[in-house]
Length: 113
Image 1 (cartoon, rainbow, N blue to C red):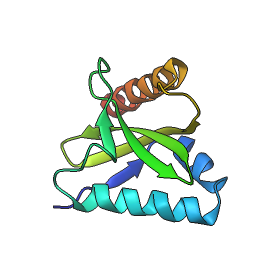
Image 2 (cartoon, rainbow, N blue to C red; image 1 turned 45 degrees about the vertical axis):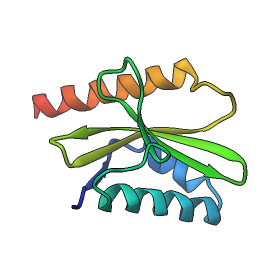
Image 3 (cartoon, one colour; image 1 turned 90 degrees about the horizontal axis):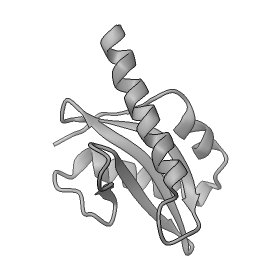
Image 4 (cartoon, rainbow, N blue to C red; image 1 turned 135 degrees about the vertical axis):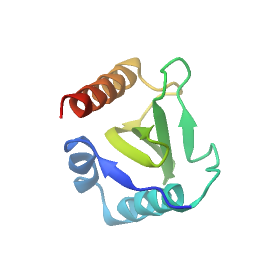
C-alpha cells in the first residue's frame, strides 16, 4: 500500500515552512503514515461531515492542534490544501470553506488541462 501525496499550489508548503523543526518532523511522520497505512486511524485522518470528500489530517504537538485539509483523487493521491493551527473545539467554518474552494479549484483545473 502506498499513496502518493501531492501539493496543490503552495498553501500547505508556505504553512509548513513557518513551523519549527519538531513540528515539521511530526507532520512528516503523519504524512508518511498516510502514505503507507491502508486503514488510517481517525486520530490522524478524518472525513469532514457534509463536505463531499474533504478530509482533515490531524496533528497534535505540544498541546497544540493542527489541521491540514486534503482529499483523495483516483483513490491513491492525497492533495494537501490549506493548513492552520486550531484554537477552538470546532474546526473554523472559514477554514473548511477555504479547503472546499481549493478542492473545487483543483478538480476544475484538472478537467481543463
